[in-house]
Structures are given as structure tokens and as C-alpha cells.
Image 1 (cartoon, rainbow, N blue to C red):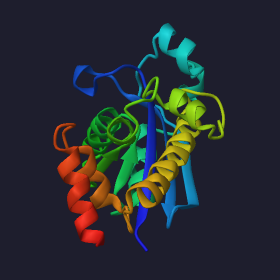
Image 2 (cartoon, one colour):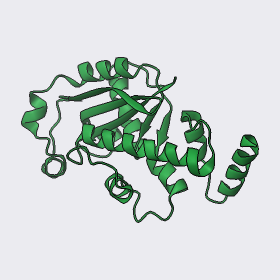
Image 3 (cartoon, rainbow, N blue to C red):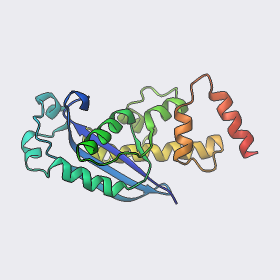
Image 4 (spheres, rainbow, N blue to C red):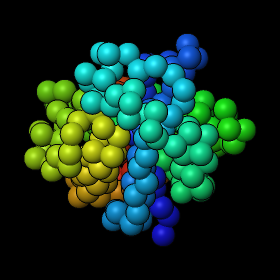
Length: 205
């Protein structure tokens, strides 16, 4: 059964292209909708953490100075993920850091990504917000720790992914909402959704 790796980064800012770096990474490995393993580590990329980022995440400069080097952590993370497809909440952000940090190590980052923000917008347009914490609270899913820490956010994204796949099976009749299906759904425009679901219903029939 195909594994899916749910990832979250904490960083010094929003753009690795502008010199921002990762400070923490967490990955929750799932198989058949169940959590089978976890990876989490702070990392020392040799950069300063701005005060407003520390206020948001609770990660201090002293914490990352005592952490393993970023290259070591990312090499371990890459081995942990292997060739498993990946999921993140606001995946464009996490994918940029996954690719940028691995590039600095000379490692490939070819894993395809699905995004629970895009999926939630397709499936739950009525949601009051598509932020991770808001969706978790809206569905009554468990909050697994401090928000804006990588493992807690990866755990919550995993819970949200489980709810999305559950609703795809029960509400939309998707027999196997695998990673490929999730990627197809997230790229479907709002206008094209009726045809998308019609094709799905025909396939089931």
C-alpha cells in the first residue's frame, strides 16, 4: 500500500530565494490512512531567526544553535521520505523549502506534492477559513500540540488529510482517493468541478 509523507517546515521567513532558511522540519508517514512513523528535528542553518519569527514559533536562536546542521537533518529527512509522495498544508511553501534545502545538500527533491489548502477549497468552500487551525477546529479534529511548531502542524495536516479522504470516499464515492487523485482534484478549477465529479460518478458506475 502506498505511503504518503505529510510534511511541515518552520523557517526564518517566506522565501528561500531571498536567503530564508528552515529551522525545523517534521514529517508524518502514513500508510493506508494510518500513521506508521514520524520524523522531527530542529536544524542549524547558520542564520539568524528574527524576533517576530521567534514570537510566532517559539523557536529561538539558542535552540537552533544547539541543533544538528541543516545538511545532516535534511539528508536524514530525505532518507526517511524516500520516494513517497508528499502532502502539506499550503504545499507551495513547504515544497519550496524541501527543494531549496535539499539542493544545498546536492540531493534531489522529485517527490510530487498534494496540498490540503487547495483540496479543502475544492471540497469545503463553505468553511469559514482554510487555515490549518481553523479547519481543524471546524471539523472538531484533535489539536496535537503548539501551532507553528513543525510536528504539531504536520500531525494536524495528517488529521485533515484523513478527513478529506474520508469525505471523498463517503460523500463522493471515490473508492481509492490516492495521491494521484488528490493532485488531480486540487488542480481542477471551480468551474470544472461539476464535470470532474460527473466523470468520477461515471467511473464508479
